[in-house]
Length: 296
Image (cartoon, rainbow, N blue to C red):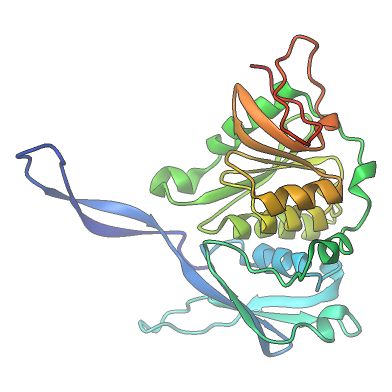
């Protein structure tokens, strides 16, 4: 397995007038390419933080509609490619698909590349994503107490061990409706962190993730809502803003989408019926959405 962090020497500036610069050793999050090969053919290259690469590949393939379940993969292993120093880089993942599976057949028109800044999904439209949702999310009756929701960002942050050392990693955490943390993954790419969580759930036989809450440390983009919806997650909460297309997809898919989750307030852009707000709680409603706010 590759390194999650690396050390480098940096010049430390004191921006006060007349202050002299110094030097220090800083810890950085590692960002390296992972080439995904299926049946010997390159499918994708994603920039990621090494670690939990099997989960990353499984989650990525599932989000792209190429993997129905863990049983569609016969084997998934690193190729022992060597770096300039002669040591294995673990930057090529080789997937052997189950004969007869979609993954073994027609996959994609061409290989594509994803960066750590944002995911590249193969979906041409919202309707294409909705067709891959495993079960109607409108029917997921999970209820979430706003008091529990308010605790989730802190619980996520408390388990970000690599972020503590680098300050440069996103996190995704899967929780029960009671606030129990089931899985947390970190990565330089927010979409990779979500793929790693979904991949873990696939290998655990837990997909679709009915009744679960996915919390992400950054913004809620279309790609993240897509990945959550396809995995059957009814509630997605982000500490930052959603995009307009993310909100549209969440509403169409029957998801609950929370943004700006920064206790004691939050915005709910879709699916506010799943939040059990106490009678005295303050309510923040957004135009055009049946939303409920966390108690202020």
